[in-house]
Image (cartoon, rainbow, N blue to C red; front, top):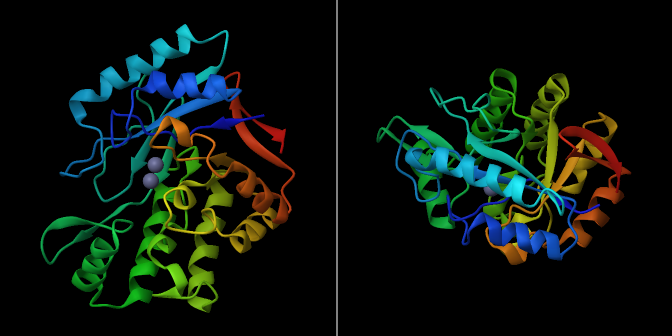
Length: 275
Ligand SMILES: [Zn+2]
Ligand SMILES: [Zn+2]
């Protein structure tokens, strides 16, 4: 069964109209496709949806849901950011789910939000401005924000939970084998387990050439499997051609971690289906 619930269209930083993605999904034989525009934030960014587009976005996806209902299931989601005082979008009408993610961290030094998962230049700027070059402090701050989001504002799905490896090719900044790294991950997973949240397996890092592995790494998936945390496979596509990018590779990784099922939204209910 082919599905994805993590899709960016031109309402945020994706490239095409949502209907182009729905058509591509029908052509590829998908059972369901969910949209997850970057929800509006309270500061300027290059990739979040503007507040004034939110209603249009929800209505557009609802129209597609109706129009394509005999061919594919279409769902309305949002990829929501978490930071102090961030708006809570989880209960807005018409929304089927949220993917919670951490992309920004507040810098007191220059009173603005800085990217955690941006370009290598942005990563370095955040590292040097807020953390004085201390990677361990930056990684711990990321996982502590993630854990706080799960605890205080649990989404349906935790998005790309080890996103910081995006700029860590060749272990440039840290090793995932470091004890402190594993502990930070484990703390977040404990909270994810407590709240009964699904973790996505996200192929977006591979399709955009940042990583060779999915988010999260296989060793993290193995830990999740032991804790019986459910997974959902998502492509994080920013273009209709990428809605199933690297799905075969990802399925091999998920299965190698011991998973035999994934949790998907079908007929309006989150349910486990065979991989
Ligand atoms: Zn994201
Ligand atoms: Zn995304």
